[in-house]
Length: 573
Image (cartoon, one colour):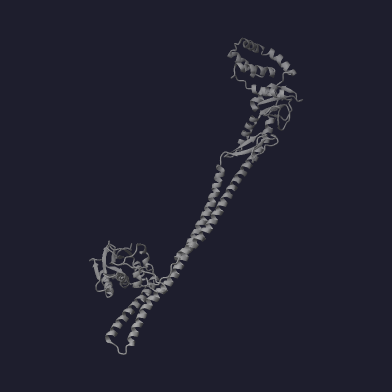
């Protein structure tokens, strides 16, 4: 059986207006605008917030690094003050020089007396150099003499090299610094890999004395006459340590490394080398020097930016989801209200048409009877028969409304009792048989031995009659209708109505059970109805724990199946 229902329009059953925009299009457009506009604003604000927070996070990390840099700078002055104080101490000038080079990691050094005169290394023109030269000739004369002789003969042996190197590295032996450096230079020519730990420091110290007169300046580094060489004087002014720029950078790196946080390194730059925007002065002990930091990678900045971005993205997405949810909720609410308003309009039009048609027919029939001066018995009988049919039609419309209202509001009290499915089918067929044309084929197929159904016989009979009535109305000429009853498993019985009518489109099969819904087809306009028949069927069957489904018939038309639990069976699927 195929129910092709339509919604009636106020202008009549088949009234049509001109082309118009679908009812939901303008609502969808409005809701899209209302959702997209706040979403766009949220996305714009989200982008701005993420950019701002990324910059803020980067700034916070830089401030943390700057704080670490200030902490490192505060330790610079104390470090060099303690370093300079460690130069002080008693002892022979030569041994103090060795101690300075070996233990303090200076590149060179000059030992002064209280008046600022050089004690070590003595220059070639100093009185001390002359006295040390004489002492050197008396002390290691034999060793140096053998080296001089072997050098002249070109027979310098490894033993002679080792012996002279040991003498030159032993500052206990009195020897003028110039003489010691001279012998170191000659020995290096014969043995390039010989170990002379103080050679470079002694040479740097001698070069400084040749380039300038020592000028002790405690409490700070000073530049010297030698390029890239710095001097640091002890507080008592007796020791002046020499440092090349590379040595100072290395020592500053070691110092700053003690306060390095993860992910960055601190750097020291000498005068004349730009330190960058974050550079700060290294302090009074290193005039002209700068300290700065350098991130090893962008991980801290990226991680902080990601954290802030995730917070704002989460908040933004939450706002977008909330906006979309509110929009969908508002759309559904407005859609329901529009459908309700349209439903009311359609209902008024449909009810007006369905009530006006039988009333108008009855009035015409009555007027026809009253117009006759003498009643014709045959005409009266025919008119009364027509009046009875129209009255029955009017009663069915009114009864449909009342039944649906009671069922929907759960005010209908069902009285279930065991009934035989065969008897239920027979009663329903008998109720519609007078509306089936004589040339139609109406068959009943009941499986024997069906279990009883515990249902309200009157209500379920109404549901089955509605399905049969629709099968009759929506099947054109040559009607072939089959009513079946059969077992479905152990717990259910199916009541089935098959017709060869116009069929139900696949997309309409769920909608036809909605109240007042009618498929817009020509036959539905011709057959009339208010769209409540299948709604009543669905309410009654579901109230009894069953289901209603529709599918295509094997040849043509539709098959409506009412699946109901039998006595002692479970709930409907």
